[in-house]
Length: 177
Image (cartoon, rainbow, N blue to C red; front, side):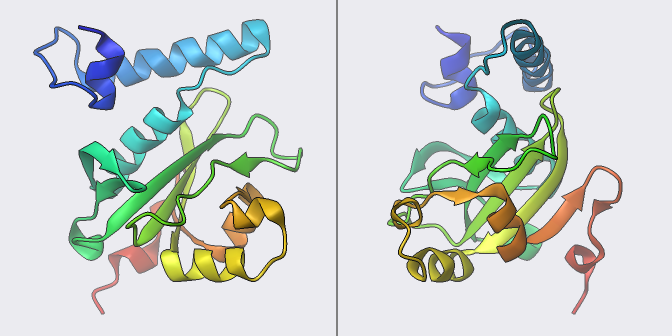
């Protein structure tokens, strides 16, 4: 059985001698080295972002992703259906980075964006509601927006920072109100 299929949930997982933590760690290392060596990126950032968001925010990853739903929330996000996006930012001064297309017709409630550094390590996680995202996407005449495409900068304006490498979970996440 293909190890990647096991990690992505496409097939029933089998017992492995490697832990998922170790596999993700090695995937980060290989992807970063591949980018430094070739200048090209391996298409693994989405899976790493899913793993990081679930681990950091306590989400339950869905084995079978359907209609734009990658995870189900727990705790303060209990029962919310979540679409997870990830983006590697090598040079923050360089603009124009885009996130993957949102599944506008999907059955999701929240979108989480995990931003990763050149080593594929998360440094910030943002969250936005479906209503916030669709309002912005519907409010523009841009063909990209109509397809669900958006820049990282725009997502950061719409959403709110919920985790950072420096501060961990942001204070409002821990609010008891």
